[in-house]
Image (cartoon, rainbow, N blue to C red; front, side, top):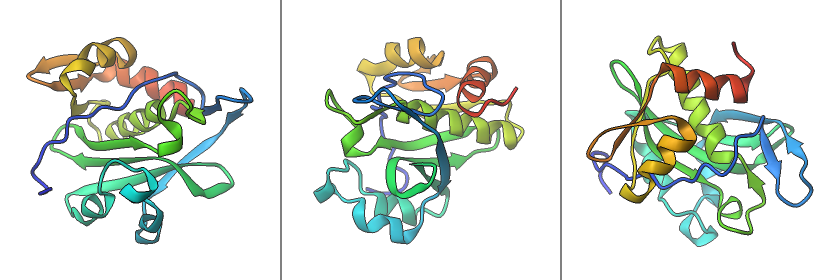
Length: 176
């Protein structure tokens, strides 16, 4: 996989939560997002159920990688995000929930929404008015329109504009 290859995103927005929600107990857990480190990569492997090679993504000097964890439990990664800061927006290169947060038997809901909201937050911080773009798998375009308020730009490109980004940031980060 070279760094110029566009990856079609296939994350599912299962639920918008204030943090992440345990599917068994219904308890909500506050989260934090921090920079992914090289030492984090030892357990983020295809052998452990991750779909993407995050070691290759980690080496991409043009992108920034982040991990989502539960507050006071920084060693269990709930999801990962890779973004590139473009001239006027944030581009989501890759977003993946931890293997135990995928499918019908997932442990936590809200992981993907949390990570997309973070990309929107960074966009506001960089002065891009919340604009975020990503390339969607064709069959998920309608899903992203409905759940994220993203609009289909052309081909498989999706755009989250200021209004939709603000809703996500307010929901997850309580920022007005």
